[in-house]
Image 1 (cartoon, rainbow, N blue to C red):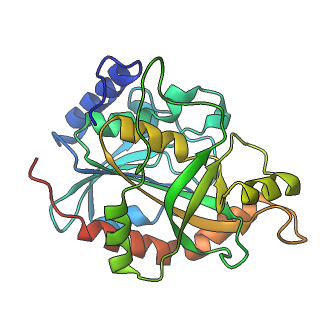
Image 2: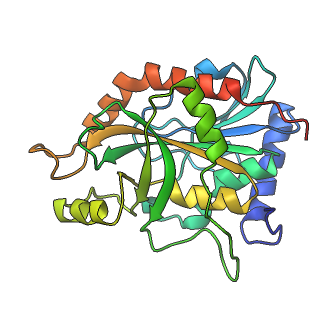
Length: 275
């Protein structure tokens, strides 16, 4: 599926992509990677960072408002010859900037020529066997934001939104990787124990405040989508302890080297596209 170039939001993405191309001298990128909580080290392991741009200098991007997120856009050259656009400036829905701002990075990647969109996040686990530090492939999602990045009569099939091919490739790197359904809620508050019971009942395995809206926009833009979550905490009501953002950051920090290596190994297996 190719995106409708007249769709609201694509003009801003084309402007941002043109700025990135001019600032980096890289005409097109092959892969884009959005780094969530805990995943920040991955960029260092993927390949050589040839250019780093402050996010707020690129049209439509903002410096991140969340501790634990970096505020740069980087162009990385992998040993296999891929050009990876690393988006370290994610806008969350709860920031109140609107859905177009949330998916601007994804649309910019598409405008930059990207064919493979990799989304990562830190999340809560609804399954007690997946404790903090567990990486999980996102195989499906439930969008409970009551919002969509698509506007007007824009109908997009999400049946196989999360690429089975890329999930299989990830399992060739680590056959033990589990997969699950990610639930995006608007946030920024964490969920109540009753909400967590509800989410388990409707089929959720992971819960967080990002990814689903971006994945929809990526599919609309014609990209193949792969998403991975890092469990940073057990969801509310799973333990006696209160949820704390500092603990989320710490869980991500401890797991960082292992999951970043895993992600770099997955990216290294992606075939180089001639298109």
